[in-house]
Length: 405
Image (cartoon, rainbow, N blue to C red; front, side, top):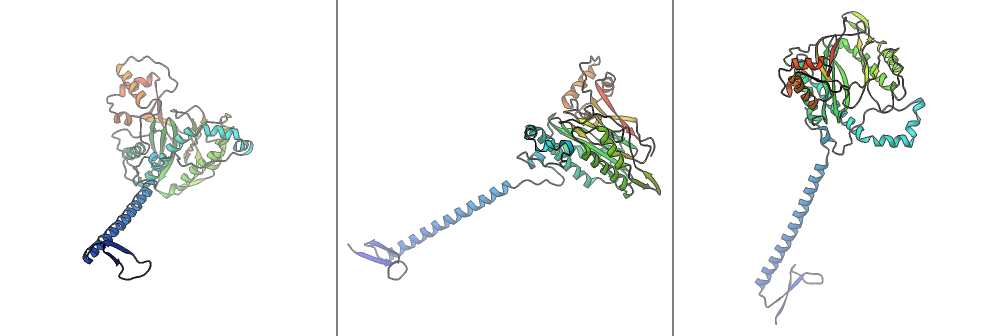
């Protein structure tokens, strides 16, 4: 048997790589070395490619974990932006005076934790409201048709809240009351009202998750002449929120609001007006699927001695005016709502029965407007709607207006 030693690296010495070939020629040895080198190179290349692929997949995995960002205009449902269900918290007012013990009591903290699913629903609805509100502020401008403005706002709410029957959606029609109109006006289909530069618009809309309603409004004015009026209402609202709390008397909240509101003046066309709180408009308590739950929050002093109670929800609403300080009800009604406490009422008109069934299915006791009936395919319903109103099954929410500005 012949033995041959080949130094792969072309040299001799300890530590050098070598192979033993039985009865092989030099050419065969060289070929074998080449094959070994190629195999080794191929193996190293495979390892490198596998490492690169693993790193690439790891980067993809990291990208997938990055939180989604809202688009402009908004199009991603809020629930997808917060997949863990940890929705943003709003401003939290701390307890004060006699209620300080609620902050430190373990029992009270435990009871609040039991309410977390309800708080999550409210915070999700609030985040939808905030994102839609921010978007609408960026696009509202003079020359817009009011009906287009409302449809744009409401379609964004439906999209971001993932509208789902009575489980999630719009809580009440968009109020876009202009100038001397204080509240409860929304355009009916075909309305040609156009937003003007000198208009003052109160934009009021609501969202809800599982019947937990978020009711929030803001004022839009393009002419800087009205800035002090807007500031008066904004600061009065913030004051009302700070004053509110468990065991606080509603009249005390109203007195604090009025004091701040009426400390402002506004100059309009060279004439100075004191801003006044509207004495016959109020904030209100809110219940599940019930926008007005029974208690009213005045915005002037001398109101009810009733106290706010633990677990209640309130809309602190303020209205500032340069007029006489009260409103009247007039104009064509556009807001309707099923009577929350109504029992069975016999209806004679078949069309009224059919319309009521549609209202129950789509709105229950949430407020609606004629545009919403049009949207779900109802037509020729005015007589039936009047019959339901006359029977007390449906409540009308009249437009309120200032008799003088």
